[in-house]
Length: 241
Image (cartoon, helix red, strand yellow):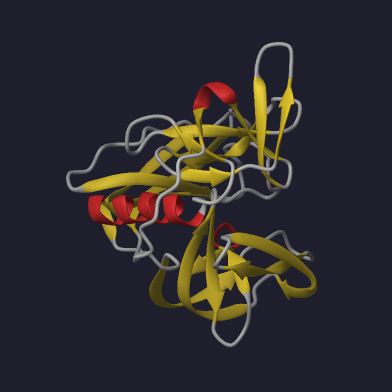
């Protein structure tokens, strides 16, 4: 049977390699499975799986080496992110993601079906509505993004510490848009005060476009890169070069 390949990279917030990349081999069409290792002094906080279609499972293919990036933060950065999410949501009905540092919880759709994205434990999220199903309650935290009641803690406690600003990280790099040939990717406008993202359907980039990025920001489960003199693009839609 035909075999496919995948590469798993272990990176910090500045794209520095923390562990040697791991090469995986599997049968074409089968799911790619990998472990998330613990790294001393760091906390795992997100993965980027580059798939042809957003929301589809990552499978071994015959003609493409699949790319998986596991991103880590220092413990200080993780604590800062949690504190800032606390500050940003202090005046709203909010949820806190359960679990120990570095754990993930799934994002589901309105029918309680798991999506490809996850959220990091410890963060506070503003929620907009709730939906009761037969076996659980779902909370809406974004466009078609829901979390299960058992994965979060309902929290209305206020925090008056105003010391944290928007959590952006400087990153000077060149990137290339990596999407299916013949398609385009939309840019995003980020409201750093409320930590929300709005897709700009009239601002599109073609596959292969090269861009210069200078900052990155985490909005819920998505990592965005800021394009110099422009808007933001999802990190999963580009390759750093």
